[in-house]
Length: 323
Image (tube, rainbow, N blue to C red):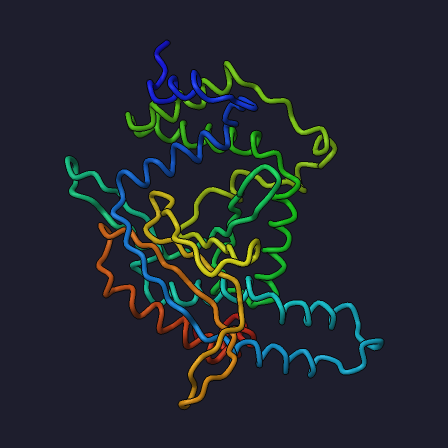
């Protein structure tokens, strides 16, 4: 009774193998992304980048680090691994590019009845990146990667990824929900009532048991609320999980931009009139069309292309260098 009539019909006429209640994480994702799809006019730009200069640069760099594998120190091995860590390269390259296109790095307050809408262009560039875990996707944040060298960015991403896979998401997202609800109450924001009900319902009626494999993980080895809240842009790296060329991403409000990165692959390309094998990657940028027009985003892709064509600008960048 009181169930969606289409679901009720299917339950009456279709054999069900298993009934699984949504976890609090899944409820939160459903709420946030449904709100995003309803309210945000999404516009996407899909671009294919020739990454052959990047691959050739990293391979030549590996050779210069040490030719005798037996003589490589732990530090040299780590620097070799960084050469192959294209995820860290793209996080840093995107952060640099956002520095030059600030309209895409920030958040929007769209309240036409109150102030007509405000775009906040953030000075901090806090990039969240997706980590696939056995519980679902968690998005820890690398803060101000454009002000750190690539080695630091790579170490932070590795540490955050390790923590994400050792974190109980129910505990983490319950804590994040309490933080958001407190802010909503302070702001007298009635739009937070549904989120409050989702959280209360989860607390009162569905208290999942903690994962026993994580009970002995110390708090310092798990993600904290500060590690997942406060992003100004998000990068979904589907290419690290599956052999996928692209993903059309859904913006996480109140952010105004989200990027999807496909896998690095060999493709036939025409260069100087000849068909040759080239390393190609697809980057999809999904923007909130309320915040800015597509033309304002075009320079971003020129910056990304420049960093791919000249990867030394990222690999050899040190704090204090021009961004």
